[in-house]
Image 1 (cartoon, helix red, strand yellow):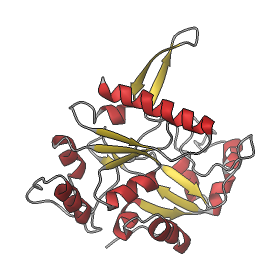
Image 2 (image 1 turned 90 degrees about the horizontal axis):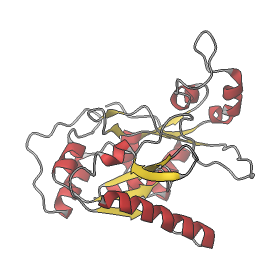
Image 3 (image 1 turned 120 degrees about the vertical axis):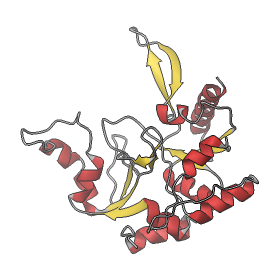
Image 4 (image 1 turned 90 degrees about the vertical axis):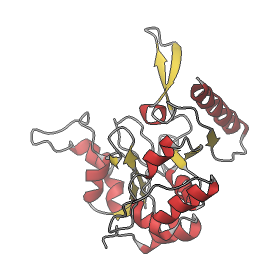
Length: 250
């Protein structure tokens, strides 16, 4: 059985601190260090490169902190027959700071459109979901050598099972552990795109394609973002929930 390598501190964070099922962690998270981290994060063809195809030194220097290690997570692609997605999330052990001096806890591939996290799941997770909604599971479910079940997300779509949209992949993994079908986006405004006219005025908003694929049929969506205490942040979260919720109702 092949399982992703996870550093003990990452296992501690994901399993003990976040309450994620150990098997779910091994299916979806891996520890990276050294230049390997560049291969996962600096994937965009829009990044400036040398004649040999290497990302230019300025970008390598900007992201030099990721070589000190961290964990990586990516999910399955709803727009590509549920194959493994190249886009994902990296949590560095030694985060960099933004222009305000605040640590950037999570890194996503720069110059790359936002995607979602539809995580790989185990048979136990599927059984919990089916039991929660009193649904019959398909016959002849395939299970890979590392414990991933095939066909879970197609089944979710076909059964119109309610979806929880949450902020951050750890929360999605924790909810899946409890038998809720959860999809993560990296930030509160990452579920939709803003379309502007030539004068810079917002003309409309639209769901990102990954979420739009789940909104083709009528189903319930629950938007579950972080609890906040600062008035400005509360207002921003409420606005994002309102905007995203309206798009799901269209």
